[in-house]
Every structure is written in C-alpha cells, then in structure tokens.
Image (cartoon, rainbow, N blue to C red):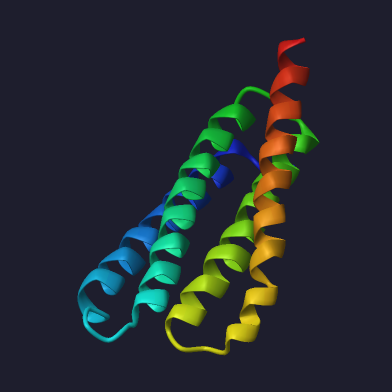
Length: 126
C-alpha cells in the first residue's frame, strides 16, 4: 500500500508542474498558438491543476484510512492527468490531432478516480 505522503508529494509535484506549464503557456507560447491551440492548452492546464489539488485531498484521506479504493483513486487521478491533460498539451503544441482519441480515456480516468474516492469516503464514514 502507498502511504499518504506519496499522494501529497505527488499532488505537490503535479501542482508545481501545472504552474510551470501554465507560465510556459502564458509567456513562451504567447502569440505562437492559434485560438484552438490556446483553448486546448487552457483546458489541459485547468484540469491538470484541479486534479493536482484532488491528489492533495486524497493524501489527507489516505492518512485516515488504509483503503485500496483510495490508492486506486490516486492512480486514476494520475492517469487522467497524463492522458487528458497530456494529450491536450501535446495537441496545443502541434502534435497530431489524432491524440484526441486519448483525451476521453483520461476523462474517464478522472471520473473513475472521483467515484472511487467517493466510495472510499462513504465506506470510511459508515
């Protein structure tokens, strides 16, 4: 089983990476992306940052319970960040639009993570 420190550390690292990529998008890419690419980058950043915070919250939950659902939720949050945000970042940077096939899998990973987190929380309460 992973320790709660792992999830808080992972959340902190992914949050820091989202700040770095957000700054890169706002400054280094300014004026080089078309409207669609800007929208992809913004969406990638928003979901990346938001789900990094979810990992931090998950770490707090993991500190209170040793539940395999919590651990699975964390891995699905990570997978969602990589697949959803990662595919959008890459498309924004000019990689093939066929990467859009991967984006919904990342979205399903996020939904799975939230569902598992909710179930783990309700199981802990009851």
